[in-house]
Amino acid sequence: MLADPGPLRKSVEMVVAEIVSVVASVDFQDPVALDDAVQRANRIFVSGQGRSGLVGRAYAHRLMHIALVAHVVGETTTPAVGVGDLLVAISGSGSTTTTVHHAAVAQAAGATVLGVVPPEGGELGGRSDIALRVGTRPKTDQQSVQFATTLFCQATQILLDGTVTSCRASSSRRTTISGRGMRIWSDDHRRSGPVARPPTKSRL
Image (cartoon, rainbow, N blue to C red; front, top):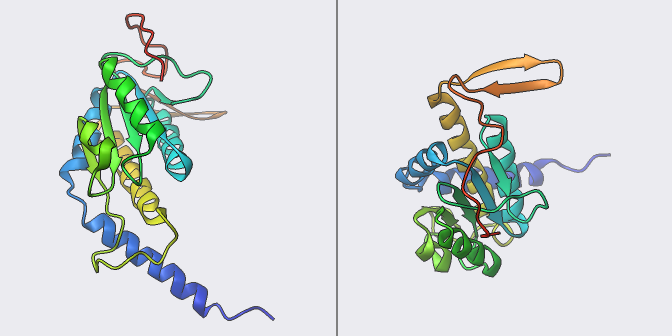
């Protein structure tokens, strides 16, 4: 006989309520700034460690789907960062050593850094050109019922996905369906090919 679904249902409802509470508390000028920075960037690089890194990878994947040039820092095929690029750096603590280092390298190369950080910002928030501050606890100011930075990552995923939808809706792109899936093309130029830029040695 199956177990009573009541406790699981209650847990899920609590998790959803926490996410809604945190997302509602975000200053939406921050996601708007992210949306604008993404559309202006030559290429978008994403950095994050652990679970934040998984959220970043999912974000880069969706950017690729809307025909933007996106790279995950640390991959063997990731090129050097340079002027006109954007680094989206995600850290639930705001002080993850590797992610802060990536931000420093990107800024030294002339790229813009957008940090996705907790409300207090941390070292990454202080270093970022743009900071998207995501709450780590519900509006009740009580500790999350979830483990560690789970709530931060969930809310970040939703906010980043929201900017992808917004970016796609505000562009002039059209979609075509091929036998191997969806390909998105720009009315002006295709963004999925290589981007010409001056050589640089600033590897992330």
